[in-house]
Image (cartoon, rainbow, N blue to C red; front, side, top):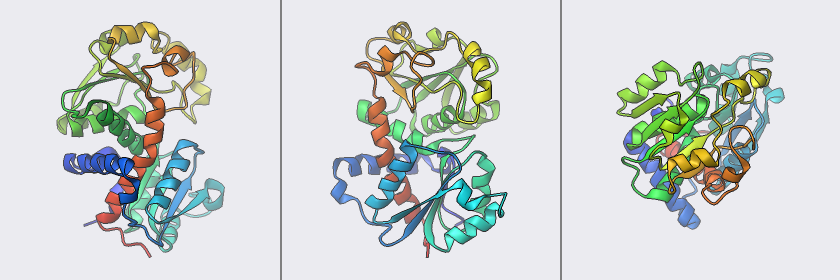
Length: 307
């Protein structure tokens, strides 16, 4: 069957994605019902990049499933410096039922998944942020119930978060509109892949045109971790793409605001929006736990044996 993996949202079928959302919602409502599918087993959490929400939510998800999270910093393994990625993965697979990693280069995850037969989970890479997308679509399910035909508008950089949202939208029948300045759009190949999955994706450079009729407006930081040297150029390029009260008014009175956090108030979002009554960012953040728990349970059920 191959290695159970969740390196990007489209590693799941539409039915599997819906099942994960169902499980996340059920587990959130009734935590006592969550099966201890990792009872007595370890999960390696390899972090090349630091994190707050990802580490805390994933560790607690492992605990909720009866497992033991093992947090491993980059300097402790030194992938590609002390030893090859595949060697690290094979070693960890000898101890743990799952390997989950937050990395700079998506290729690192691909190498891990190719080397082992335990599930491999992407906790963030330069290409994708799939567990975040699960939490986001769990939040949308809680807000709206049925997702089919809802309109999600992403304003900002066509980055890893936007890419995972595109696949999640395609798998769930959500219309996605992405408004980005020239040169910062979603990758053409990614858009084509999402459309081939059945996704309705619209690209535009006009954020005001994009948000009309939105059910939710989503944004992310303009310069992600590792792009600090681009921060000044990005601030100039993204002028006019800040989600402020005026843009939210253009979206309509019923549109919710979403952000994966951390938020830079006064840059990609105004404080009055992220801290306002239409913001669901803390609901999203809390849902990272329920999303991670459901993803891990799904992958273990699909064949991760571990040792």
